[in-house]
Image (cartoon, rainbow, N blue to C red; front, side):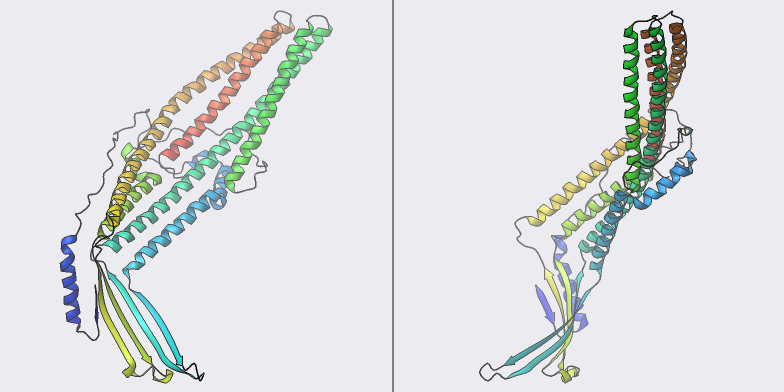
Length: 462
């Protein structure tokens, strides 16, 4: 329904608008209830005993390594995944501005000219000239426009939190890749030590073989273990190059495996305070982003309901028209219009009702997804807290094994040189020592990685 008025009194216009709103008031959809995520939340962490107190940000500084801090800064500037997240935030912000623009009237300026003539004579004349200023504005009676703008604003807030989470994740990825590169360097050094030790063993075996004290079998056994150790050294060297490439990719550099890292793992950070489980929901940006998406889904559901109600638009035009350019400014040629458009959907084949059902289903989906994500976040913290104690005990066991294996290897080598033991015992002792050393490096690395994982799981502020 369209009502157009020319020169109508403003009071009559207000009366007509009020009548239109009153006629459609009975069509209002029932209010929507705010969704709740039904999930259990413990009062305390169950995984392990942790120091009391609130979570302290700044885990990166606790490494006390300027090189690592420089690598993280470089990654935050040049990493491509972060640029993707930043572009997504820009798009979401623009979408929010676009949705908010519906609050304001749309103003268009138009100009037109028409010419008519006689086709037989070829004569033509300028018949009309016109200029008009047209204004249109939707009266957001039912909150449809407001709900759309609110949803877009919530999505923009979620994108901003996604970007913050991406910053935290990238810092953690760089730190973990850096630690893995150090461990790879140490494993390569250990493999080189093993090659040197087995090379010395082979030299001794060859001397004893020439003296007739051992058989050729010992020479082959020693040569076999040396070749296997050299293969392990090459594998460790390649692992080091791949670890360097992993860091370079995070930094946005060309992956040419030229990044050098320090030669020892840093001092293990102490276990930090973990706060309370409920505090995690307000601290982690990924959970806050999921909460913002719940708000967006709630607003979109409200918008879908409001779309089934009448839409009221105010339209007006102010312009002038004349058959001569010089007469356009003459007040006599000025015209104006003011009207109300009332659009009420009647038959749409169930499209608008389906839009409501889709929005409601989406709302239930994001609420369930939030609960699942929160439970996953709780599990991350619990797992890392439990792992901390287990890894500490494993380190102690491996240190004991390494010391015992090192001493056994030393004594077995002496006995072999004295002719009191065979070569197999020497090689087995060497293998046990090497396994203990390699295992100790792997578990020590895992300790550091879990500290980073815990910092990220608790909120990630670096």
